[in-house]
Length: 266
Length: 289
Ligand SMILES: Nc1ncnc2c1ncn2[C@@H]1O[C@H](COP(=O)(O)OP(=O)(O)OP(=O)(O)O)[C@@H](O)[C@H]1O
Ligand SMILES: [Mg+2]
Image (cartoon, rainbow over all chains, first blue to last red):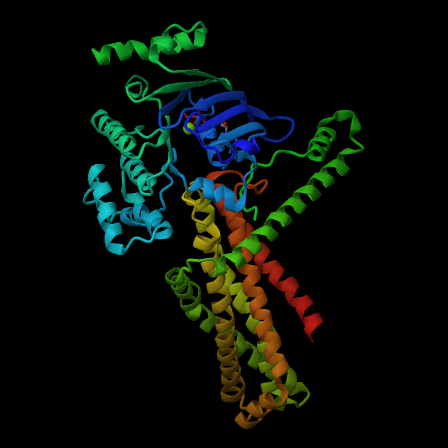
């Protein structure tokens, strides 16, 4: 593993889970969320993580960021194991990510503008004028113009999501992790968000991991789908593959979601 | 520096102790297991608080320095506490003057009033009461703010932007407290002595010359140094405990979850800060005098 550390070739998966196990709780009544899961996230592509509520999707994202640590197994980002990365190295790894949390995690004592400007102010040497231009531009793309002086408590849930997205995109990340980016948005807005993803991905070429319940629509965007169920994963590269799967729960999942898919894509 | 919040995986010892606690036919061992468990938890807690303190202090020197935030905190912690400290100081100084007068009057030693009032204030009451008032007014607020940021994932979000939460969030508060509390203590001393003067001289009729002369003759530089050292130490204690409790709200046992956990942890922070200020005061007095 040490030898691969620096050789970030395009053949190597951007992110890789190897036999990752994660449990919560006190000894005695531990609740195992992930049983030895393994999957790869290809570089420059979009991977969608789907699965029922409470199956460990958000936990999976936090494992990638080192916000939670796996009990066993490895989480490789560019060949580097995040499970034992600390301090400066961990910070350096995180600088390459843009993250949208499930609850948006906006700084509630800062205005919308300041929230989005924060990564630029803290981490770049841009002048205040350039920052203002960049932030207003992003706000415009996300249809948030005119709300920049509001505070998170004065926004709707969907607006918070969009501000969180704007904040995640400021530093031109190499990897983006979005936890349910379109939950709470109306269909028109979520389509616009998906189009924004495609545009920014085409521009920045980032590797995306998106957690989504927006199953039929998200297939347009996904190069790979990772299904989480009862602590196990199945990865698929196309909707067809899901339809032809033998596992009953996946077939059920396919029937429930892909039926819609055919309807909407007609 | 390991300042990551880690979802603690139980160690073998913890698991063993837990199992002993759960097993019914080893009731004899149970108290020991539970004691051991508590002790391990206490050690873990102390350890992470220690690392927290080191990070919080180191964060003051990390670049870029957040001058504006420090000014904002100075205004909140320092300037905002002036009124509270003023009235506390005046009231306690006046009571001290009155009480002192009655006690000294019995021995016909009213002339000692200035000395008694000023020494008590400079060495004990000033640093202690200032620290306690600041803990109540500001420590609780800092703890709740940081705790809420922790439970709503705002601190995680900072870390994910690779913004050091210590430099960004904690260290400005620490620095501002370290500056404010000694200054507030100095103010407390002056106002308190004036309060003692009001009740002793103006009300009870001790001669003003005797009051101030007594003070000048008895208060030495060493006494003032003790007061200053105490105020610094108390400032560090209160800001450390208040911020640290909030920062670790998710890892502290038995406080529940969500809003309740923040409220309980805030109470804990105020109680722990106040008690440690009092204990450390005793120790410092014993060592420094
Ligand atoms: N910090 C934690 N402490 C204890 N248990 C946790 C913690 N975080 C997550 N869990 C548990 O892990 C499981 C997976 O949680 P997770 O948040 O990943 O679900 P999810 O798949 O994102 O669901 P949703 O779609 O509802 O967001 C849940 O059963 C949850 O109870
Ligand atoms: Mg989730």
